Length: 383
Image 1: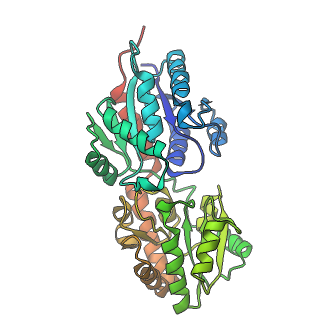
Image 2: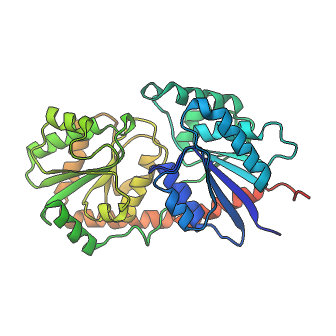
Image 3: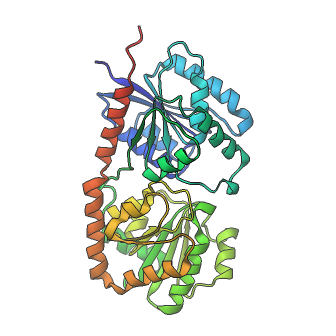
């Protein structure tokens, strides 16, 4: 049988969980089985180069606003007719909506699959266009042959929104244990760059500036912990977290942290950043599905403190700590508990965390699941 042709359609290719998962997926596919391509509704993006470098065909449709949706839909429709994929796999609400509309009315359309990457979102923080896109997806949710989700929380949240899929599959994110691993040399080097002593216990948050990520709770908890201990430091990485950025700057002025705080901005060297930390995690207020950054930190041998949002608690299991969202004192207390374990105790938890990723969330297993799902959707060959 010839290779299955799969067109992956995503809203954009800037750094993000869905975008990173898609990039790793297409890079790792068995090319004897799958002929993959990627379509971005938005122009370019940080990850576009990685996809092109992997010799994956990439098309950017240039959509820069909701008003351009009809044009993007028509361009996608023409591309589908030209390349004749067996499966169109869409990622995120806007791509789900545009992909569904592009296939409408085609005589012999490819199979359509959607991909849910979030759980319950507080949509009041986001543009009206995002709310309209999600509403449209709920109305069209019986059209895809398959809806894939990376979290059970995501499936449950969308069922509550009125999604009525014909078939669902739960495929958690997978992680590359060679790319993400404990690295003592990288740890020493990056701590020198940060100007932090090796004996300091460094707590990090890697997440873009966004209401979902709740940096306010992180900073409040950091201020509490730093007021109790002198041996901690904090690292924040992500878009909008540069020195001089107004949002994080205002927070740090309002809640002064009596300990070093390093603001790194957007970074692509994620494994190196994580190597410099002692405690990882995520303090999101809402909306997480199955967060990449927590799995990556665990693969690097870090114990993590997470909020009970999405599938984060089931991901860390007994290898970390779980607190309720928005509870800065609880977050500080969980950090303090891990700091008190000393390096040996954290190393034991970190090894258990890495073993958990290796056992249940390997990248190869995720890729195989996608390949199997797409093969099950493959229609009869078109003449």
